[in-house]
Amino acid sequence: MTIYTRQKKYLGTEKGKESNRKSTAKYAQTEAGRESKRLRNQRYFASEHGKAVNRAKVAKYKAAKLQRIPPWVDREHLKVIREFYKACPQGQEVDHVIPLQGETVSGLHVRENLQYLTAEENGRKSNKWQDRTEQEQSMAENGQRLEVL
Image (cartoon, rainbow, N blue to C red; front, top):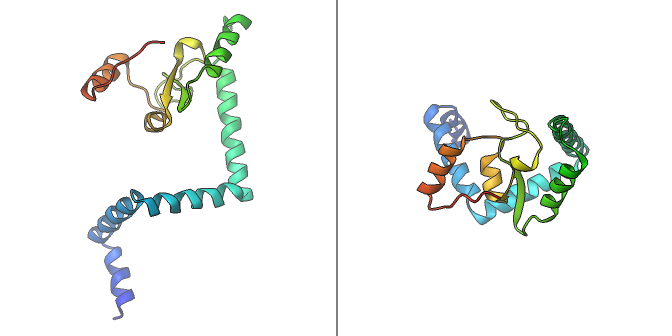
């Protein structure tokens, strides 16, 4: 049995799969791993398939946003939302507190549902929602303050 065959057989076991997951996760945390992922994503999104997937994702998000604007929102309120986006501090992103496309809830695209988060916090939050008391508890445990804008 060759070394390659033994390695392939080992990676097919639960122990091998777990070992592979751990080493892959560890590599992803290194500078070389992050650079490798960045280049892989760059190549993917430069391909025709990657461009098409990205266009579809953006179109879906824009359609969801339009569907989540309630009928009572007037032009003045939309102007306030636009100003909120324009006033976003550098290094932060505008996030919907209650996501527009959440698994359990769908929020509205209104000013009261918008907040500023860093890209890292926004990525960690993704399309999830915690009710305010859980969020406040979580932030308090991490030594953060909740600021209502």
